[in-house]
Length: 112
Image 1 (spheres, rainbow, N blue to C red):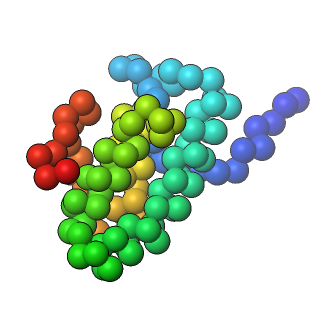
Image 2 (cartoon, one colour):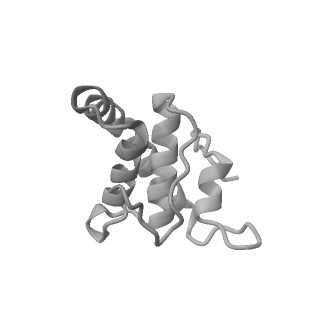
């Protein structure tokens, strides 16, 4: 009998990033787990930098998050647009900056 030893809880919000209209994953489970870990790690790594930009440079919370999302949406980042939105939403949560209302995928903010 094979058991699944994966112990990390993946939140429903991330599942939605890689699910089709019927809620089925659009990539293999191992890749889904790897993408989640990458996105969660990125959000965690961005906390200190985002705080520094906000406090040291006086950049507003929304602008820090918007700029971060714009950077993550570039092809070089390795994240797709939905993952970038998830990372920034998670980053806002980790920072305690309240809910982040990201621009719709494919749109940009005028204050970038």
